[in-house]
Length: 79
Image 1 (cartoon, rainbow, N blue to C red):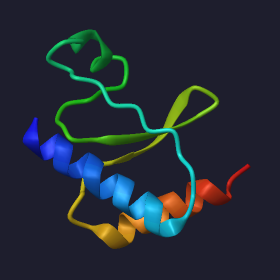
Image 2: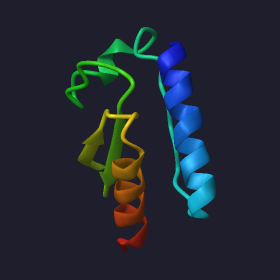
Image 3: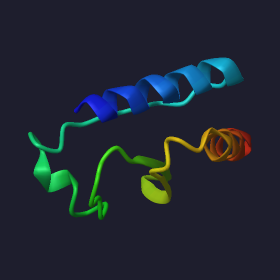
């Protein structure tokens, strides 16, 4: 969707400015609706952070850049 594309562009811009690397995977839930249920995705766009294959944080407030920077910094520092 258009909003999802804007969110992805914003995410890629923030990651680029921070000079960090994150794998970013997107999926079209209209084409793969079975992915929404196990991760309890009720609306999009949503950013789900994973660690060891398990979701550990969710982010939906793409207008809140400070929180996005905080989360990306937090997870880029974790080993």
